Amino acid sequence: MSRAPGTPWPDADGLHVDVRGLPPPEPFVTIVRLIEAAAPGTVLIVHHDREPYPLYSELAERGWHAERIEGEPDEVRLRLRAGD
Image (tube, rainbow, N blue to C red; front, side, top):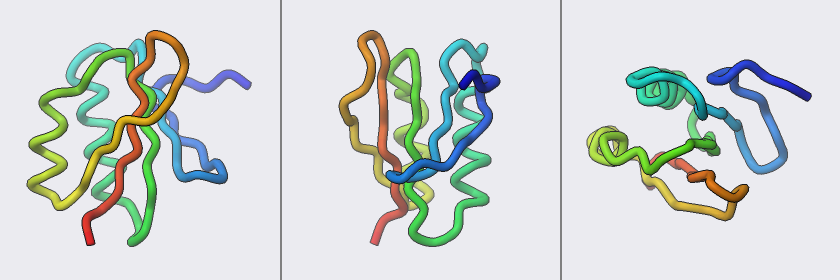
């Protein structure tokens, strides 16, 4: 199934969003919008084409944590969760 970049979809392990191929700052903006709208306990799985360094400080300020998880070759895949 083909999805437009930046369009989220639910899966068993959380809400996924693929921001690969989006021009800056769209990946950052898309991810921040999703965490702002997230219900408590939401897990967001981000599929990115590079390490999103500016995102990490933004997540920390908002009480979210990022964990790098296994993904496809040449993909940075992150699991984002709100802090406890």
